[in-house]
Amino acid sequence: MQRGQRTIRREIEYRGRGLFLGEEVSLKLRPQPGNTGIHFLRVDMPGSLPIPAHVGFLRGQTRRILLGRGEAEVEGIEHLMAALSGLSIDNLLIEITGREVPAGDGSAWVFTQLIREAGIVDQEIPRHLFSLSRPMIIGDDEAHLVALPHPKGMELSYRLDFGSSSSLKQSYSFSLTEETFLQEIAQARTFSLASAVEEFVRHGWGKGVTEENCFLIEKDGTPLTPLQKRPAPLRFPDEPVRHKVLDLLGDLYLTGVGLGARVFATRSGHSLNILLAQKISRLIEAQPLPHRKVDIKV
Ligand SMILES: [Zn+2]
Image (cartoon, rainbow, N blue to C red; front, top):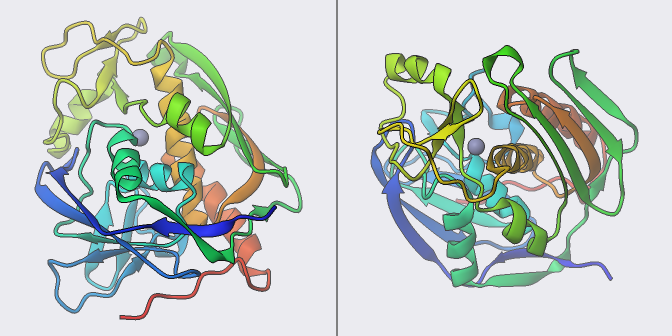
């Protein structure tokens, strides 16, 4: 049986600091009607338009995801997008009082809990999965993504391998349902190679980092806490690769639709994930409704 689109039952608010900029911001999630899609609204910038959570509004080509419309920009959205993908939330307005989405606990968990606390509502308009019509491959020998048609839903397989930067190698395969997302993926926290920390400090990033909301990986694969550099307790032995799956889920949700696809990822990060999302989005744009979302009225 085909399911309806989903939104949340009531407004809900959350305050916290973003991981990169460290500014305290408030998020308000608000229910929206069917076929509205997901939008961010900078309520601290009066008159700014809602920014669709869609690859068509991406700016820049950095490791961070940045959406913009006019003067308004929003970043640090990826783990919230993963939560929305994992819980199949189609229609939502995310009001934010600053530029960066709060880090929460560094995973998608805070957002999943917030949405579940607000309650999830099935709407009357049917939710159509967009199934790929043909295989796609992007990347190179080192890092690539292969997406195959899979009308039943989303399946992701990720192979994590840092080459000479770290000996850590992990693989994970995941079939998306709300239950599997909550149990296997939603709590996996973000991390960085210890060798990349200098670059973060140089850019002035990571101001919202705490001992608990991320971890570092040493060259020999040892996980360390980010500030005191102590051995970091992990939530899963393979938490790093699970987080890569989380990132991929969030990035692919910037297509604006639920996908029917089996995706095999090797060493891909946000920039490659986004290239696949853009490629899929072009296929979607070539299709007639109902896959395309209408813009929100303000
Ligand atoms: Zn991430």
